[in-house]
Image (cartoon, rainbow, N blue to C red):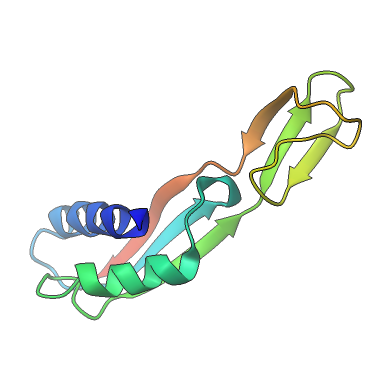
Length: 109
């Protein structure tokens, strides 16, 4: 489960920037093409924050759809999963969105 390693990295970064202040909420943006399962990420986040300044913090997840441009027909398409295929049949796509995995914000006191 790679979500645990990702959650631990997020918690490490958030705690470092919190500089001892209590973290109440962390918002992350996760693209559909990252293969990160939001429910698994929440579970792992809850484990990773235990004993830190983020203990009990809420994890908010903004999900971002995948998108690509077909190099053959020029179509802009939405990608629901990791199958990179244009309706024209081409697999020659340039991914334009959906690979994000970012900390967007955090609330501290």
